[in-house]
Length: 172
Image (tube, rainbow, N blue to C red):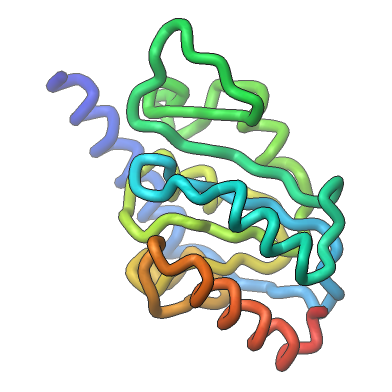
């Protein structure tokens, strides 16, 4: 237990230090591919959010989802990639292949769908090669290019605000 706390603390320190050197270079490209990082601890409407993106014109094959769970049971089976604190190393890297693949994917849009700062989520969001990152205003301001001031339970409000501003920014 104490070691997990220390691991989280050291990883958070690494992430916060690397965020201080970030230069946001948002692209002007039209959004075709979308990556979504969920925190399943607080939000269970993953399918509804994905269906909302499909309704707005994003092809289902162009949407990739990565889910964070606090605890993964031994015999639990998922139809989507899942990671937890156990997949973090002491040096602020991720060891799981699915997460590494997600991070290296050059998404046009990354939706950081979590409103509570957890070190694993911050790390994956920060390491992502996405061109434009969107998240909640309650998360570190240096992580995202665009922030929406609502909470994770209001996914319909999040979606309407997101697409309203993406249209203004000529990204859709």
